[in-house]
Amino acid sequence: MAVLSHSCLSGLLAAILSFILLFSSPVAMAESNRGVQTTAPPKQYGMLLFPAFQLLDVFGPLDALTTLSRKYRMNLSLISSSSTLDPVTTRSGAPAMNPMNSTFFQSVLPTHAIKDAPDLDVLIIPGGIGTRARDLNATIDYIRTTYPKLQYLITVCTGSRLAAQAGVLDGRRATTNKKSWASTVALGPKVKWEGHARWTVDGNIWTSSGISAGIDVTFAFIQHVYGDDEATDLANLLEYERHQDPQWDPFASIFNVIQP
Image 1: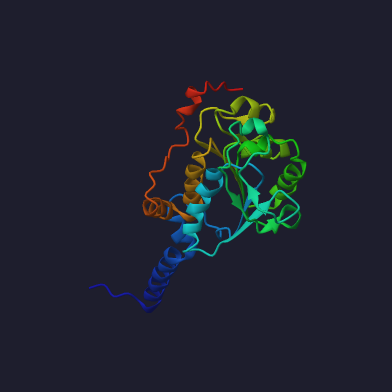
Image 2 (image 1 turned 90 degrees about the vertical axis):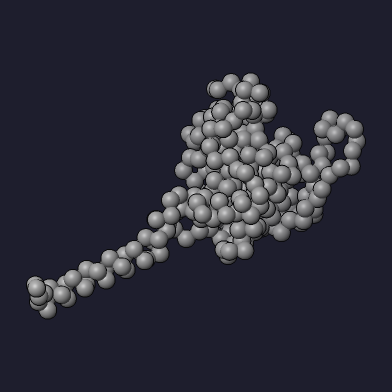
């Protein structure tokens, strides 16, 4: 029977120990989970609010992220486009957008006015009728100055209108609400608009198609940052069958989207 010398045995044990330490390290464990980044996940999230925002654009993504925050330390700021902390309503001030004079709307209490917004890791920009308002300069300026400090920017629906006007989508792939396609892409002539996409990812910018697509881009983002298992478990917990193909988009043909 062969007998290992003391030096050979020591070398073998050292190699085995190094192997064990390598594959039990946090980085190696993270890399073994396909689709998850290896840096620390973001903690500071912000949702931009403006009058006449689309309700599901905000609360679809927030419901998934709020549930996720039971497992990870996450902080949320609700940032009003106003200079005050008055409630932000989904009601449009334009009579043409409310021809029946309905009072069916909701209001959200912001945590910060735009001038006092805290530093963020992730900013989510919803869409809605309010993205067509004329007095959006302060909101667009905020997006322009905030983006360079972010880890991620996520736009939902016509939230990409605001990001495009801020210039942060220039040279990037992006998509938007297909019913509002023509008017939105006209605001971003330097953007690489994708007419057939549920969502797009270009660098640290994630953009979604219309309204409900914001939930799918949020799950894709969660999969990227927190891993496949977290995204799958969360979708099952919420009993949501998410679209996992970013090219799934029947609405492009329904609304006759023309690629620029």
